[in-house]
Length: 204
Image (cartoon, rainbow, N blue to C red; front, side):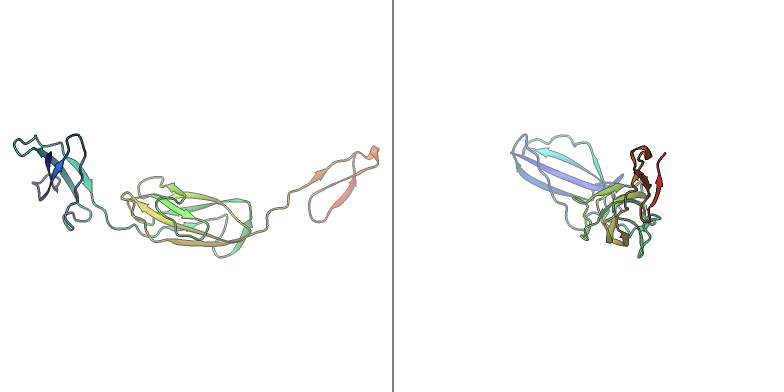
């Protein structure tokens, strides 16, 4: 069996702590948990491993680096010229564009959203990627007749999800398709075009 010593510390500095683990079968992997408080938020740390068998020690492994982020992003902002908030506009079945902004949070990588009233989740909900780190994106959804609710949240590089923002709007009934018929007067028929009030004219 093998033993391993996982050492860690701020990048560019000596180790600030270590965790030992024993009883590792050769050819297998082992993970450890660092003590609470060992890593500070927004810190960047390196960690490395040395293995042994109670008689000999291996060389140190190459270092790996990790950035710590435990702070959730702020709430995004939403706007749309297709469906104005809190009002009845647009038609059911039409696809509307909703501009979403990270609202000043610099490490947002994507936005998660739902249209069924549930909270959006980092895994499982539809998402759109930010155009740049901390940038915005466009969400496109197809409206239902009546009241609609779009719920959106920002997600940062550490998969922290921020607070949910609700965008409510109402869509009118679906558009009635325009029907056009052109019939031949010689057959004794007439033609009409449009919806609503219909004007009849002779074809030809």
